[in-house]
Image (cartoon, rainbow, N blue to C red; front, side, top):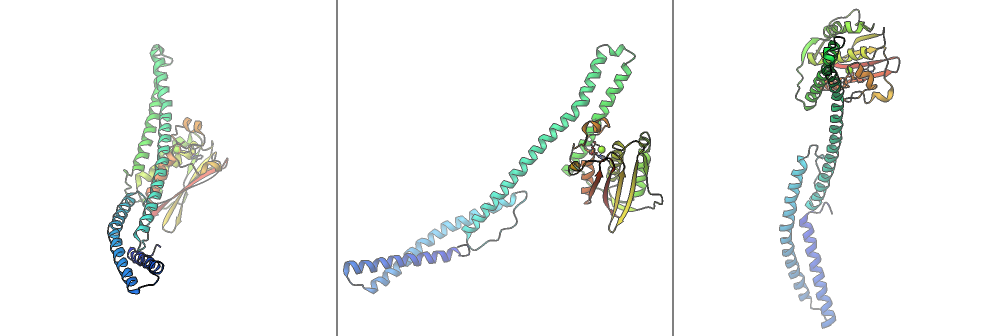
Length: 346
Ligand SMILES: Nc1ncnc2c1ncn2[C@@H]1O[C@H](COP(=O)(O)OP(=O)(O)O)[C@@H](O)[C@H]1O
Ligand SMILES: [Mg+2]
């Protein structure tokens, strides 16, 4: 049916109608008049063919024109969908095409509704996480302020100390909000990557120098290759700095006392691979696939204690993906973790 055009269908219908009418005439003549006058039969055949043909032609004009219009409307609707179906191959039968279009449209709608539902769950989860994260420092601040108001202000042994703690909680809120801002800018695509050519080893050395003090308080050594030579890459310098800071800070936060974080560079054809390897607490296998999700933390209390928001790796991944590059993680519990990401050679 699908390859028969409406015109051929009409012709077949008209011929069949004419044949039925003329068979009727033949039977009538045979039964009632007991002999058949063939010229009448032929006349009947021609007249019924013309009449039914004309009638069907009108049907064609009204019906198929309408079907064609519907087809265009449905197709336009379908193409407005965010992820439209791949193009449909039309046959010469527009009713059949309409059927295909409607099925594809329904399929697109179904997918879109599922996508929206997922987004809705994601959004709710995100809001829940944000308010949960902000609640802790706010309640802490409230506690310190209330104690100070309740006479603590006059108590020299606690007043400065409590104000200092409240300050720390404010700092924590600022960190969370900064991370949230970065995530939302990266996710809405507001933040554009501004590539430039720079020496990745110099940038890494800069970050190492800035983080060294924090690392040494934990007895952790940050080490770069000894015979390091400049390696040029094309990337957003500021954003890549953010990535390296995040990974080095993590290696210290989740590192063991007197451990070591090694930063290494590998040449892999068009790309440079940057590796940040620690011999810290490591990450169990079951967590690895979710590590880059926002707010995902292996050990919530440890992360919070260390001032973590659970957003660092989500930001890191966004930045690397915005560069069309990749980031990977490999880890063994109690042995250590290796993060490696690629950058385009410059
Ligand atoms: N180098 C690492 N060693 C062990 N665990 C890590 C390391 N880096 C990240 N993690 C785990 O991944 C989680 C997510 O990291 P991240 O997104 O940076 O958030 P956080 O703010 O908690 O540091 C951390 O809470 C921690 O459990
Ligand atoms: Mg982190």
